[in-house]
Image (tube, helix red, strand yellow):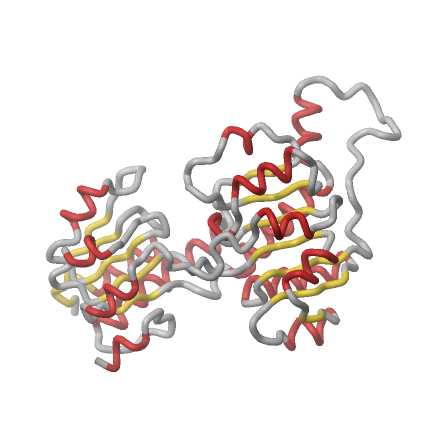
Amino acid sequence: MKKDFTILVTRQIPEPGIQILRKNFKNVIVNTKDRNLTREELLKSVKGIDALLCLLNDRIDAEVIANMDKCKVISNYAVGFNNIDVESATKRGIVVTNTPGVLTDATADLTWALILAVTRRIVEADKFVRKGKFKGWAPMLMLGMELAGKTLGIIGAGRIGTAVGLRAKGFKMKVIYFNTNRNEILEEEVGAKKVSLQTLLKNSDIVTIHVPLTPKTKHLIGEKELKLMKKTAYLINTSRGEVVDEKALIKALKTRRIAGAGLDVFELEPFVPKELRELDNVVLTPHIGSATVEARTKMAIVAAENIVKVLSGKTPANVVNPEVFKK
C-alpha cells in the first residue's frame, strides 16, 4: 500500500529510481524540465514535501531547509554532500543521505581515461587529425609519457582512491598515497606506501585527487603545492573543483611549471575559465565521473531506497548525519 507522502525529485533521474518512489508513495513530483530548478522554484517547491531527492548542483542551504516545514529526509544523488547545509538539516531533525560505493568504478575508470588522455595527448592529437594537419608518421610527432615504471600519487585513499590505485597494477606503476589512515588494501595489492603530502607531490609523475570538499581540503592544492611537483608531472582531479586553486593551476599550466592536467571538476561549475579552455596541455570533461548507465542507475536506486527507509522508520546505510537519530 502506498504511503501518503509527497516526494520532490529536483531533476529527471534514471527511471528505476522513480519507479521505486512511485511504488511506495502517492505523490511523486519530478522536475521534467531539462534544467535545474531556479532558486525561486526550489524555495517554493520544497514547502509541504516529506522528502527531497536532490542533485549535487542543487544548493540546499539554510534558507531552503527553513522552507521545509514537513521534510524528514534529504537524499543527495551524489557521494559528496557539500551542496547541503547538513548542520541546518540536523537541527531540524532531517536525515541527510548520499550514494557512496555505487559510482566507485565509474569514477576510477574516468580518472584513468584522463590520465591516458593527457599523458598521450589524445585530445590534442584528435584535433590535429581533424584539422587536416596529419601528413604522415614522424619520429617527434605528439610525444607523450609512458606510464610503466612511473609513480602514481593518490591524494585521498578512500573507495575511489583505492580503486584508482588498484588499476595502477595493470600499468606497472609504483603507488604512493596521502591519507589520514593506512590503506592496507593498496599496500598489500600494489605495494603502495603512505607518505606526507609534500613527499607525494615531490615524487609523483601523476598526482590524482580523491578527497571530499571540506574546509580543510578547499585549495588543498595551490601555488605552493604545484611548485613542489615535477615539471614533467600531471595533475588529475575528479573529486571537487574547489580542492584545487584554479588560478594557481592555470598559471602552472601556462608556464609549463607542470606538464599538464586532466580535470572533470571546476571551482565555479559550470563556469570554466577561458584561459583554461584555451590551453592544449589540459583535458577537460563536464563532471562525468559517475556518468555510466550502470552507475547513474544504481545511484537512482540507492537515493530512492534511502527515502523509502527513512519514511518507513528505518535507518538507511548511507546516512551523512547519524547524530540526527540521537535527538
